[in-house]
Image (cartoon, rainbow, N blue to C red; front, top):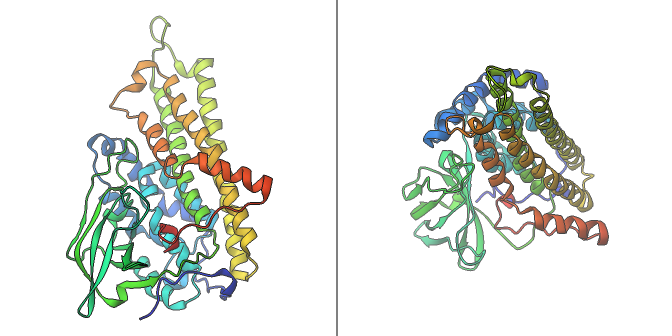
Length: 417
C-alpha cells in the first residue's frame, strides 16, 4: 500500500526545482481571475440574504484553475509563489470571504503535498486538482474532549468507516474528503471520494458569520473504504513545518479581504448619498470632512491589514525556498509560526475596527438588511474565533521571554494530514 499522505520531514527533503513551463506574473494571474472574482462579488449580498451556498461560484473557480494555483506547471498547475497565492486569495476574499475561507483545507493539504518527500503523492494528487478536483477536511468532532470517536473497522478485504465530524469547512463542496479515524487505539489518516455511499454532508453550520463555508456536519455511516483509502497511521511524532503559519495566514487573508470589501462598499455608499444627518435639504456627504475622515481611517486600517498579510507571505516564501534547499530547521519553523501569531494579534483588531467604522459613514441607513454591511464584521469575528488569539498571545510572550517554541500540532489536526 503506497503511503500517499506520509508526513513531510524537512530535513530529509531535497527536491530538484520543478521545471516551469509558464512563469506567471502577479498581474497576469490577477487578470486571469479578475472576471471570476467580479462575478463572485456581484452576488455576495444576495447569497447572504438567501443563505445560498456558492456552489456555482466554486465551480467557476474550479474551471478557471484557482484550486491549482500552487501546483507546479509541470503537473498542469499555475506554479504561483506564496506571495502571489496570498495576493490572489486576498482578491477572492475581497469578493467574498466565505469562499476564500472554505478553500482553507484544500490549499493546506496541497501545500503539504508540495513539501512531500515522495514523488508518488504529487503524481497522485496534483493532476486531479489541476483537472478541477477540490479536497475537503473533516477532522474535528463535537464532544466533551478532543478525542476522536470516528472509527474504521476491518470488513473483509476493506474497511467500514463510521462517525460524525463537525467544522467540516469546505467539505460540502469537495470531491475528496481527508479525515482522521481510530483503528482500535491507533489514529489513521484516510482519504476517499466524497460521493461514496454512506457519506452525508450537512449544511447545519449555525455561526453568525462565514455562513456559506459549509462548516457543518459530515456523517459517515458504514462507508466502505479500500485499503488504499487508509493512507497513513500516526506514530505520535509531528515533524516541524510551516503549515500552522500557512493555515493561520489563510484566515488572516479572509479577514483582510472583509476589511477591503467593507472599504469598497463604504466608498460606494457615500458616493451615492445626497443627504446627511443634521444638514437641511440635499447635501454631498462625500465632501463632508468628518465622512472623509472615517473613510480615510477605514482605508488605513485595511491597508495595514493587507501589508501584514503580504509580509508574512514573503516570510513563508523564504521558508519554503529554504525547505527546498534543505536549509530549514526547527528554529526557522518556530520563528515563522511566531510571526504568523503576531500578525494574528494585530490583523484581528485592525479588521474589526474597520468593519465597525463602516456604520459611521451613513447613519441608520447603513444598517439596512438590503446592504448587509454587517456581514463584514460577522465574517471577520467568526474567522478570528477559529484559533483563539489569547492562547497565541501567551505563546508569543513565552517565546520571546524564555525561548519556548509553540507546541507541535497534534496529529489529529487538519494541518498534519
